[in-house]
Length: 192
Image (tube, rainbow, N blue to C red; front, side, top):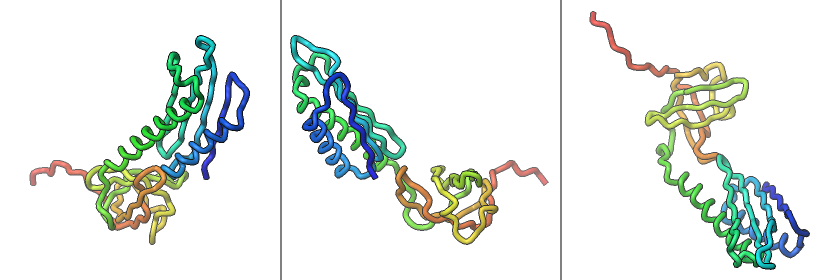
């Protein structure tokens, strides 16, 4: 579910402008369904040569990020037209949103299918923890991911077999099965 809020400061709320902003927000949701919430603030703080200059800020909350875009063009008289100001800020928000998710796509993910990992840490009170893969990547898991064992087995260093999937905040463990071994740190062996 998508939550949004639109605030108007310094001037009376216009239903036409509100509908235009809502339409832009809906277009953003179609562009990326990972948006959790949005807050749009429209201000009219100054008058320049008898013209209104609109300042618009959009804040989007997406898993793991908060994207904030300001359009505060003090002397950009094109933004005396609220439609131009709205267009410009939402164009910039769309580009920022694409940058955030493009960066996530570029991150290498482990190969599909079951793979071995080790429990890095697990908090039984909160019900979640992290595993570490052979290449050192930390991946989130929760107690619901555990298959065929009790939570008592989830101690740091325990070897597990995992399957992963893309979750709301990136890669996460979809299933986790305790294999039974423990990670052994390499130590110097004494001469016999």
